[in-house]
Image (cartoon, rainbow, N blue to C red):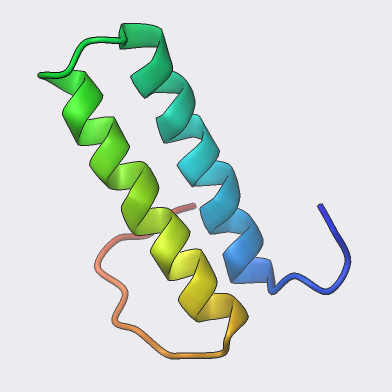
Length: 63
């Protein structure tokens, strides 16, 4: 990953990219597609918050 990115942001970016890949694989606007798109967006927003050192509540263990 790129230097200077928060470690938690890195984890979230990787997880978001995995969700994006699953969404693209299914390619339909319902079922798993919608879920994985929502998950990718949520992780991207959390990555941004983490990079900006803004605390947010953890609801799941990503490891």
